[in-house]
Length: 394
Ligand SMILES: [Zn+2]
Ligand SMILES: [Zn+2]
Image 1: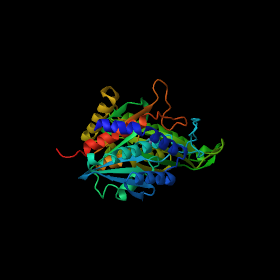
Image 2: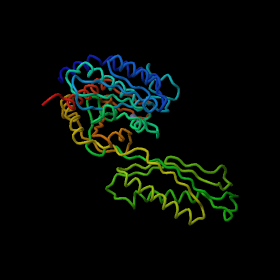
Image 3: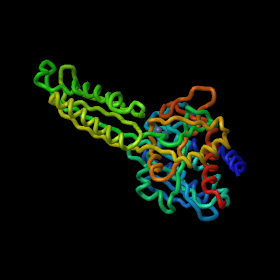
Image 4: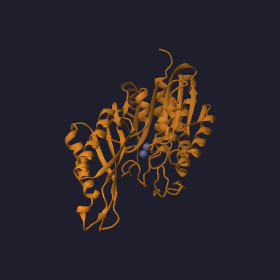
């Protein structure tokens, strides 16, 4: 079976590169993935999948049935690009100004379409269904996964387990990275306004300067990580934006601050919102200022199921070798595949996409690139995992 998968994966390598480059030339931002969705739907139909479109606005679902009834495995790819001006200089670089597939979702589409092609030729080898989920809006706070779940993507037929991968330029092509249990973090975004009282810079005693109050609040917010949370607990509160004031001699009315919190689990995330509220209330009231806090948990913790991650790990060891199937650490990145992982046993891994022996640009960089040799490997890995999960009989 493995030999057949590898042969099939190798035979479609050029096709997968073409798909990835087609996607790369025409990137689309979150919830605007219309051309992308049509392209994917056409490919899925040509492979004999039952196709449902417009799930969660632009999402596409392909259903591939095996030769007998059985469980259903979901395989998910995200489809959206980023608001970045590409600087790779490739002949297949983005034709859309200011939009780029800089997170490798073009590769995810190619890998999962490749998986569909391999498995469509092996329907006799599995019992049950493969549900190919092409999800919009992974990069935007309006998570595409939750929308698709709300519209029933995990039903009809009911999904028993889900798998996905993300390219990682930090690992070389031919390697994968796996982690059992909590892997990617819960993510919240917040916006704070410190509300003072404007006036003349020469008469501070007639004003409440929100810049001074904001400075104290910023310092105090950093003490959440350093003094209020178990130091063994992964946690970050990062500030990404601050705006206030126009001119050197005017005390402004307000200062706006934005940032993100990353940690594992809902309880700590909710407690953090409360700790922020307490700090802001105490400091602003001490200075006669006011505040507003919008604290929105957006992405849940991504949890890898022991059995599902075990299946992918085994596939990795067989296809790439034990030395290339690497245990990796959890990170405070977020991916809304987490929503699937909270509902069904799931596995999400890194697929190495870095060029050997050279520095590779990070995801979300205008020069991010990946070694396309990873595409057939990714397709083989997902296909083999799927066939193991949906294996027939005893
Ligand atoms: Zn990204
Ligand atoms: Zn991504």
